[in-house]
Length: 43
View 1 (cartoon, one colour):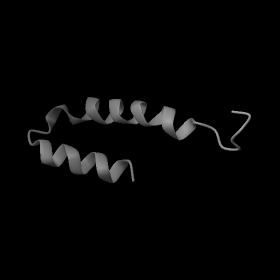
View 2 (cartoon, one colour):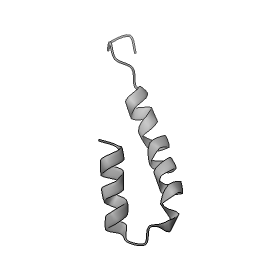
View 3 (cartoon, one colour):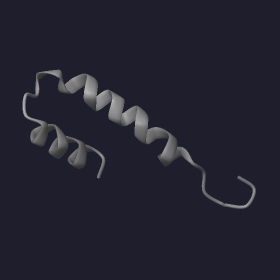
View 4 (cartoon, rainbow, N blue to C red):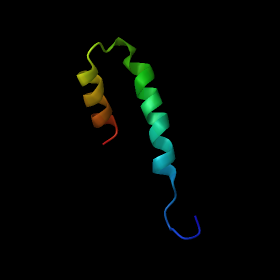
C-alpha cells in the first residue's frame, strides 16, 4: 500500500460483485445470457 497511490478496492470488490450477480442469476437458464449480464454489470 505504501508503494502505490491507489488502493485495492476494485480488486477486492470484484468477487463480491460476481457473487451478488450469481445470486440474482438463478433464473437465467442460458450461460451465455449470464456471461453477457456479468460483462454489462462489471464494465
